Amino acid sequence: MTNWTVTATAAAQSPLTREYNAEMISRYWGRPTNDAEIDAYERDEQDHDVPVFLVVSRDGNDVGCLGMRFLDNGVGELTRMFVRAPFRGQGAASALLAAMEAEAKARGITTLRLDTREDLVEARSLYAKHGYAEIAPYNAAEYSDHWFEKRLTSARPVAMS
Image 1 (cartoon, one colour):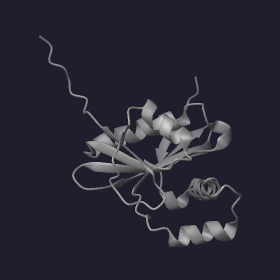
Image 2: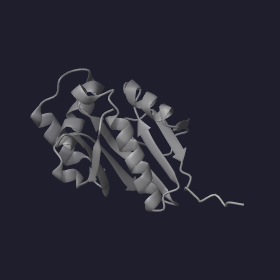
Image 3: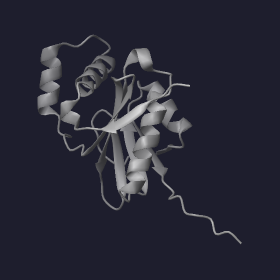
């Protein structure tokens, strides 16, 4: 069993955000990207409002990240899910999701949503595996074509008789 450590940090302080952006650009266009293209994307990106940002690590090495922003009415939005390629399929993304769901509940979030793309097959599979259901679009995100939601339940003590 792999032991993962999940900690909170600021998105701007993590090099994982740049790796995430590079992969998203490359996968979308189907070609390698370059520093100038990543710089332009990061400069023009409109969703810098990611107040909750978690990093998953193993043996002191950061291997993945996940962010959450707050929408209205107790809804949180997941963003920036990323795991470095050598660590995929080992439970890092599941550890991030579990930690973020706990963080969301602690902050009073009752529903988590996210948008993703057709080409991110692994992401769509991961979310479905963890109870996220595909829903109608809730935003007009330019590059999204799949939207998911999960209702969070609070762990309430069961009354003993």
